[in-house]
Length: 376
Image (cartoon, rainbow, N blue to C red; front, side, top):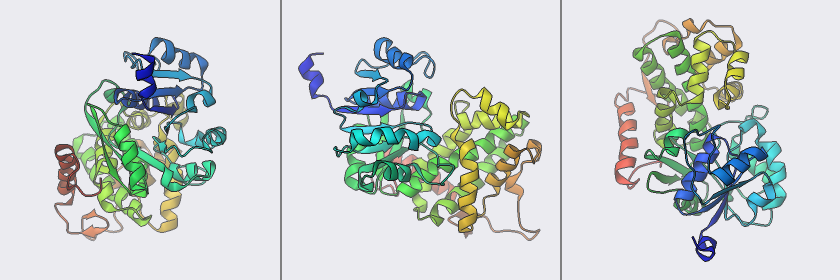
């Protein structure tokens, strides 16, 4: 490639070179951007830059030649037209303090690839970004969806949603973050999009627990279905649109994360179900399972706003060691023996086909490129 042609390619930066950050860098490079990755460890930056590999996180994957890497933050951000953040949620605030002076004089969109809430404050990642970078919320976008990193790195077709309070920002990021195997849709419901990405991790931990115990598909299907209700009730209580939780950032991500052995949260839950302690699970996981850190702050937010989350409550009891994993059965929880209505959408009873309509809507988004699809 000529130097002139390379100069014409838009420059983007990806901060964080774990499995998801590196995969998203590949998505961007395959979509026509020149990508500079920032890796905390110099040896990882060197492997990505020189060998075009990230063997520790994405074994067997060859990275595009238009991906470079550095462990110098200023070098990664220099000239970036868009900045993507893929850092463990509990380390975001600290890292953003170093990013702030390097992006203060630009109008580059800041895109969160992270699916967690800050443990101390309960803030969503876009809120932490706004606080620490002192930037207009309209400049911030979030990406979410059924996005298991290794599958995407292997170029298996999938989709995601880009959300921003600014339609212009969402559109600009979506145009950049797409290629022949990765399609992006847009919405302006940042609250629903972010909470969908957070909450599905908690349900995935529950599914992993029952899988580790040895329970079958009936139990898992029950928890997934009731989990979608919990996710929707919680997110809507904080101002989200229920349609968002029925789209890629909610139902789509929930299905992928609950059923795949590639899911870190599912794997963490499975180890818990097999009898490992929380501390042992953390030691065995060489990558961050965001769901484990999000359980406590999500439950605190739920209690403050008066939303019941029996699935997440029982996950916390297993994490705390106060419940035997074999006893986990949040789908059986009721206030009394009186028959209960099946709330299937935003706290409403009697909407018998709501889950199927949710699935149908997600499928329609894939088929029709988002035209006429609500939410995403």
